[in-house]
Image 1 (spheres, rainbow, N blue to C red):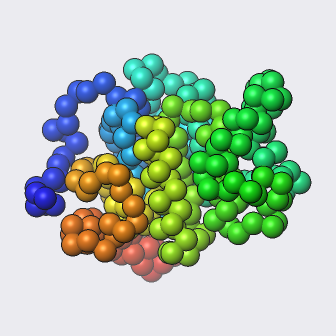
Image 2 (cartoon, rainbow, N blue to C red):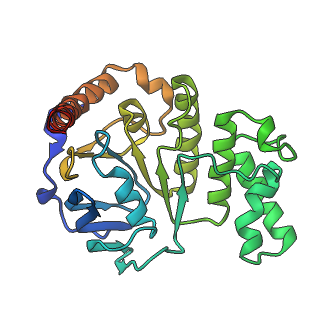
Length: 283
């Protein structure tokens, strides 16, 4: 494997490839009682078709703001977000979203949770249940179709949420720290499921995370953001073989990527702590 450091590159040196998803010169500013706050500052990044990209950065760097903008949930930004070259203006039919918060419907069984978006879209009953069963199998929950969310573990409920999002077959899957509430072992094992699904569907996937291990385990490319205002610090290609499983976590190559990313994040997290201390002293 090439040296990890040699693969870090500035975004300005990226080519002008045709991207499944592209963010261009993104600027998002919020008005607060203390004055305007720039959450994301002129960020540009492209995601190639079928690639798995993670966006990582310290708390408060604007990761979730990027997620909400790309998902069409947040407006009032400057710059462009395009899907297959077409500028977005609100939620896009080709984008599916998985959130950090618990999002299963407690009054519906697993299969009835998964069929919900198909039901709303008017897909015939037999077809929507067939499709739901196939995605339930894909996330490893076959045999749990008639269980209610209260009967499942947190990791299983997140798999239900992922199956529900996949059921309407989005071309781009966005995930905002979907495993943040889970223990490390469960995260790694769920990562195996995500990798298997992504490789089977060749789906373009963007993961928002603060977990370095998770990002390296899953990604083809990692976008590292600075502390507020969120700017693009570095882009890192992950040159680890696919198909990939959580077993890769123990390899020296994996450890080298984790160490390289931590250098950047430690810098930015330190800036965040210094900023918080300065604000505390001035208040």
